[in-house]
Length: 117
Image 1 (cartoon, rainbow, N blue to C red):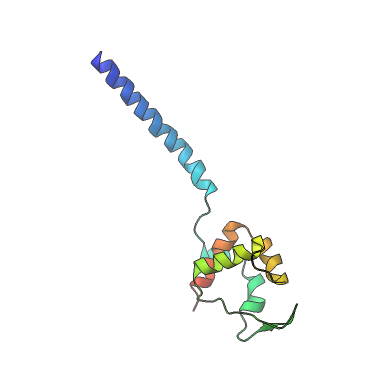
Image 2: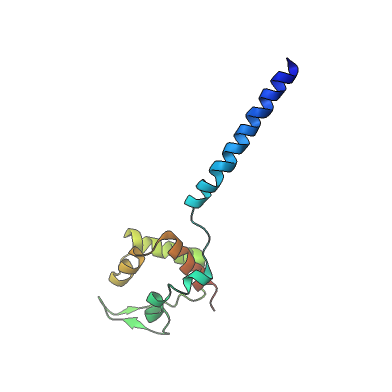
């Protein structure tokens, strides 16, 4: 009887571990991954036109000083882009650009710009 109970316990533990191993990767795929600097290189063209020019000022909808984002903290860049995407911040150009970005795009861009000097 003792060995049968022990065997049931082992099978239960094994089934729990197996189900975690099976469901773990699916759950991880739903979570956004860390930003990828290489992937961002294909996405920066929409940023460089304004944020890559020292002292640049946009004139729409009003005269607006465009900040340099090279070297900025990645979490700050992610937060700012998400705020534009959700409407908590507003600027016509940034609203449109941020609205077109996926969470992974935002992470990639933040990683790219945070590592620049």
